[in-house]
Structures are given as C-alpha cells and as structure tokens.
Length: 153
Image (tube, rainbow, N blue to C red; front, side, top):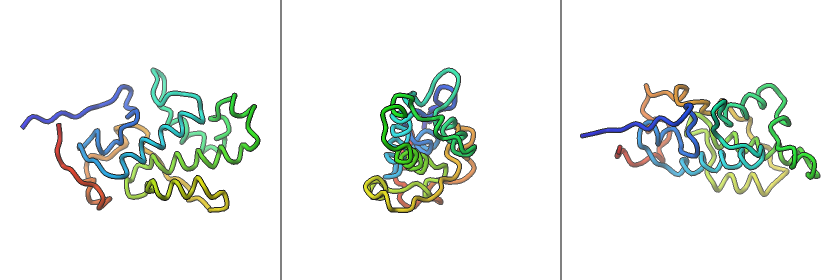
C-alpha cells in the first residue's frame, strides 16, 4: 500500500488538523481545529501561513507573553467597543487548536463559549506550533476516542 504524508509549507498546517496531516485521522475535533485557525485569522487580519511565520505560533507567543492585544487587527482595535471580547475570542481560537486532540472543545462547547460572556474559559495549553511539535510517536486514537477513520491516502 502506498502512503503519503502531507507536510505543509513552513510546517504550518493551514486549516487541516495535524492528526489528519500526520495520520489521516478524521474526527469531530478536526473541524474544531479548522474553526480555531479561522477565528485567529479573522481577529488578526493575517493568514495562518506565510513565508516568515505561522499565525498559530505567533498567537500562542503573544498569549504566553501577555501581549495578545498585539495580535488584534488594528482595524478591529480602532473600531471595537471591547478589546476584552476580542481577547476572549482569541482564547477560544487557541483552545480550538490545542496540540492534544482531547483538550480541544467540541463545536457545541465553542457555541456556548461564544454566546455566554459570563462563562469562565479554560486557559489554553500549547497548540500545535508546527508539524514537528505534533508527536508522531503516539497513536492519536489513544488521546481521543472520537477519532475514527484510519485510512491514509
């Protein structure tokens, strides 16, 4: 059987969940990953990958260093009534791109987080910063029972 592993440009997975890229695994959390990347792109006004960096890596760096407001698109910063709400959405975006599939919320949880500003959000842990940080040593099905298909390309 012929097996292909897709390694994205600059080790940045675009919208595809890393467990899909590395193992061909699809789950309900794969869409959550894609949604998280999209949220970060919208709020930053940047694409996830470029020649110089990966948006998810940059978002994590600003979050970890406590300067996440630097990530926000200047247009949003200037026209927004609440930077706090934008930072809350960045928090949700980072939760969606967690390295451990089991730590990512479901889309139902994301909807609840987005619709309830009084709900306390978990603090995100390190996301998938590049394909090398996504462990290929462990079986992804061990970390999340919702992973299904084992079919590789």
